[in-house]
Amino acid sequence: MDETDHRTTPREPQPDTNSPCGEEWLDLYRHAVEVAADEVFVMQSDSRLLYVNDSACARLGYSRDEMIGMPVWQWDPNLPEHAWPQFWKDFVAARTLSFETLHRTKHGETFPVAINAHYFERGGQGYGLALVDDLSEKRRIEQALLENQEHLKILVEFAPGALAMLDTEMRYLLVSRRWLDDYGLSGSDIIGRSHYEVFPEISEEWKAIHSRCLAGEVHKRDEDAFRRADGSIQWLRWEVRPWYTAVAGVGGILIFSEDITRLKQLEDERIAGLVRAKEIAERANQEKTRFLSNMSHELRTPLHAITSLSALGIKKTGEEKSRGYFEKINVSGKRLAALLDNLIDLSSLEAGRFVVQFKSNDLTAVARSAVDQLQAPIQDKAITVRIDSHGPLLGQFDAKLILQVVLNLLSNAVQYSPRNHAIDILLGLVHDAPVDTLSFSVIDRGVGIPEGELQEVFGSFVQSSVTRTDTGGTGLGLAIAREIIALHHGRIWAESPPPGEASGTLVRFEIPAAQLPERSPD
Image 1 (cartoon, rainbow, N blue to C red):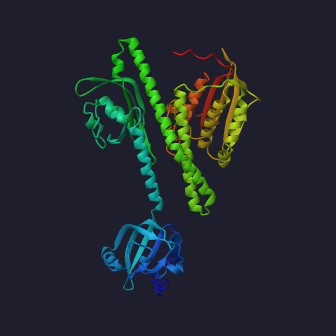
Image 2 (cartoon, rainbow, N blue to C red; image 1 turned 90 degrees about the horizontal axis):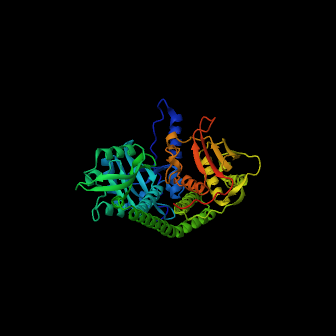
Image 3 (cartoon, rainbow, N blue to C red; image 1 turned 135 degrees about the horizontal axis):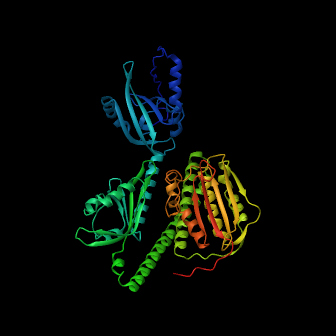
């Protein structure tokens, strides 16, 4: 088709400007349409355009002059010329249509769109008004969510422990193979079924626990007797905690459990029971470590490609929107890589495989190094970091591990601090028997931590209910910090609000200034 074939001189319908509002309101309406993010088209019965806004021109790559008079099939491959008469007939009859289709740019690129079309008449002529929403980003997000759900499904299915994920109606969403094995459900399809249908023998006490967890509480028990429908007793070690959606709050609960019936049966045979418990714990830890190591290895290679190629995309692309996509991909890739590092660190710490290098180091220098490394986020939020120290603070500790702790605490303080506020770092030497201790405190003026969660936030995969929905954290940083401080025979805790402050959080750790003898194994 010749590029000028669609050139006509259609007469755009003119709205009535003799109303009390007059041209002033008409100009306002036109301006609102022009700056709208959605694409807006007005067409006549032969499909040729009478009007198109700036957003539509920019997205399709045509000038306004090129688009006026252009037929629909030139940019909508799903609506060819021969199909238009029937489409218009159906449209006139329906008056309003909503559907999804594809749009094609001047350069041949196609992208998905959602259209809300409205029929109207002026001066005896019929016209169509189409409001178009670009679905490209929505489709990309949906695909990413599907991929994430598949990854989560694999992680849960092959988790070394018994794990079940349920929604707010107590219907199964995901279960691990171990869950099916432990509860005699191998070969059963329980996804979508109610937990109470699968286990009709569940007591009212258990149902009350589920209700409290759906309200945001966390419950666990080291051992508990569960009477099965056949009258047998199953001993369990379990934990129930809520899981959260990004916008709707609690999305359901996670149930972690371990069948310890055999261990309870061996309690009368103490020596054999202790040996058995040790073997089970070692195998479980090895299985977890092997699982994390394998997953880390499998994910690092594609992650490296993702971060490297996205960084290259950021550097090479000149188009702002595309560069924004590359930056989001790069940040997400780095965040996932950091999560993998944290998982491996936590697993190694819990397994006792970290070797602490006790040497003479300066805690003040460690604090200043952490501040230097976090200058970018500190400056982004115009935060002032004040270090209260009276010079070098020497002690016997592993500088690399303690720096990891300080970086985590300071990073949290920066993340939760309002813009243009101050963070205080307090360093000191506490004279206490039997050995002096080095103390480090960081104080922010953020939203703080609820009093009932000050201990829980140091657990694995635990975040404060105040901050968990908008920070994108994993709940591993403080758990790793706790393990590192424990390796130094120290202690770490939080206070909220800090003494003398109306809001915010103080996190403090103390470690011996001199190296203590290694603890004897139990």
